[in-house]
Structures are given as C-alpha cells and as structure tokens.
Image (cartoon, rainbow, N blue to C red; front, side, top):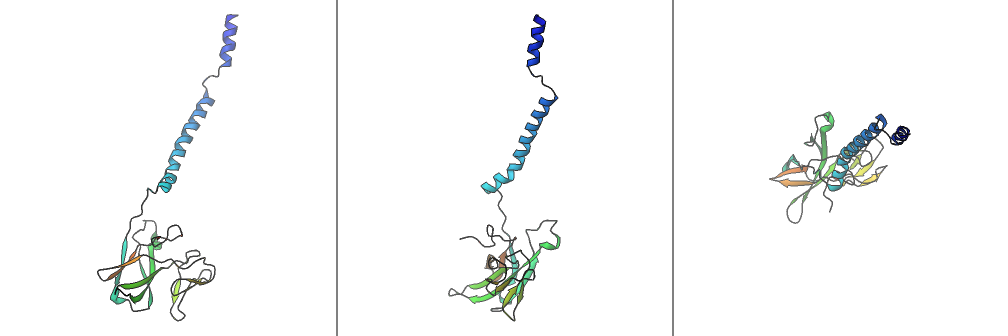
Length: 183
C-alpha cells in the first residue's frame, strides 16, 4: 500500500519533460528578442542618435547673380555605400541681395516636392517650380501655388563663410525633421 501511495503522489507532480523545457526556452528567447528589438525604440525616445552636421560648399557668393534661381547638384556627404545615384542631390539657391546690415541673403530650397518627394524643376519664364509627378506648382519663394502638395518647398539651412555659400547637407525632409532648425 505504501508503494501505491508513493506512485500516485509521484504521478501528481509534473516531470520536467520536453514540453516544460520548450516552454522555458521560448520564454527566454522571446525575452531576449524583445530586448533587442526595443533598443531602437528606446534610442528614439531618448534621442541617443544624433546626426552629424556637414556643410556643403556651393561656391563663392560673387558667382550668384541677383534674383536668379539656379540648381546646384552635389554628392550628399550623408550618403551610404548602397545609395548609388540617389546620393547625388541638390538645392535651388537664389541670391536676394544684402540686408540692412550688409549681410548677404539667400533663399535655398530643397529640390524635393513636399507631396511625394519628386524633384521639382524651375521655370524662369513663369517664375514657378513645377513637379512632374502629380502637377504640384510652387511660387519662386517656395510657397505652394496649386496641386496636391500640402505645403511649400522645404527651406535649407545656409550660411556664408569666407565669402562662400554653404548649405547644411540635406536629408530627405519631413515636418518632424525639416532641413532648417525649428525655432
């Protein structure tokens, strides 16, 4: 009778078998995977990844005629090895003269349409930027004139240093991460 009671008691306790082992293994591997996948999310919320600032030289200020918009293409220093031809980017620069403090003033606009990012084309005859993809039209100051774009062209951060126009290396702009500093 003692051996039967012992046998019944032993059957009531689960043995550490394959099912228990796989359950623990799945829980441990799931926890490790969740920890690895949460690293970018945590980095986003704490802003751990800071983008380096590169300034691209567009040329001497004296080569920009007054009130004339021109497209300047350059290799983006933010490029990755797999970018290929898409790393060739550009801006539209317009020299607007000097201000009251005798400082040079420029309007530097992104080449990307604010709708879907297609490159816009400047038409000096009409004084408009036009997007070939969906018919977006922009005024010379970059403001939206018509079409599907929800806003005007993005303005790029620029500076004049040692008599040369420089633009901060552009990335693809969004409302959350524009090309100019948010005031």
